[in-house]
Length: 84
Length: 267
Ligand SMILES: Nc1ncnc2c1ncn2[C@@H]1O[C@H](COP(=O)(O)OP(=O)(O)OP(=O)(O)O)[C@@H](O)[C@H]1O
Ligand SMILES: [Mg+2]
Image 1 (tube, rainbow over the protein chains, first blue to last red):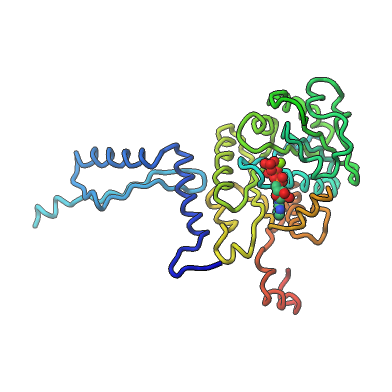
Image 2: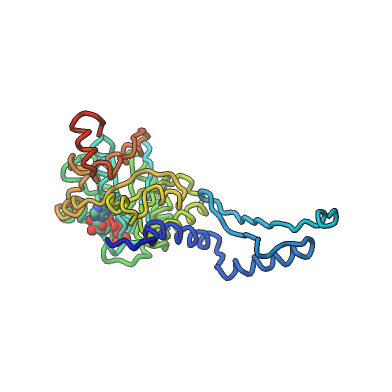
């Protein structure tokens, strides 16, 4: 089989693609619904604290047969600005 | 005796359910167990030809359920193994002739008589699949290391979880060690990671499987076949024995072969 330089092995693509597909199948969440969920979540949080929307990471992960929604939302530090 | 009922299922068609049922049945019976296989694929009868018993069929499962014959009369004895029987699927009748409770009743009648009841599930997740899993104490999900087979297997595992069938196991069939080695096929570990259920066996891609189906003599009876060995190992694990998984790919390396010939490493 021809291997293109720098191209990802096909088994790796298969695994990555399946990981996403299975999470969506299991949770019945479409990628579009996932985007809507992220946007709403960020809107709610930014009503209370200041966040940097570009640094936010929200994703579905699976561990064995359980799925979890992982959100990493760095908060902008207000107190430091005040002190400085 | 009270039999364990094991259903072989997959979601996707053509991944090797019927092959697995025939081989596990032969391996278990050759090891002294009393085994009955049930072909649950109504309208697409196949287990009979894979086992080489197609010429002996008189009655089928629908005849039993509709009371046209006794259960015993529909049990076809294997040509070689005296403690192995097949209950064939009906070929002509309507799929709805069998219900989940019919299957449960039939298995309950068989349970005191045998050690294992193996049910060959049809592909899909409809009525035939529901019938096949209804009486199961354990469901073995067969998949291939390939995207659509893994995805469909996950759907089946999800349904089994929802039905609270907790005893599930995974069989990865048609693994090609050469493709895995060149990273062009999902490895057994990849598939396990994705599906997250207990591994019961890995069966390599093996021409012998097709040759033996041609003859109607499952490959588990061939002591030299790698796939046959894999099926015999699964049969032992079903009985509760702790059998290490075969290392595929290893045997393909020249260096490994030299080492083995030199007695440096056990095969
Ligand atoms: N390990 C293997 N190596 C090579 N060929 C195999 C292997 N396992 C199965 N096959 C072949 O794959 C084909 C499909 O197998 P089989 O009929 O057992 O699948 P199935 O899941 O029962 O299909 P269906 O969903 O139609 O009932 C057959 O031709 C069989 O011989
Ligand atoms: Mg089949």
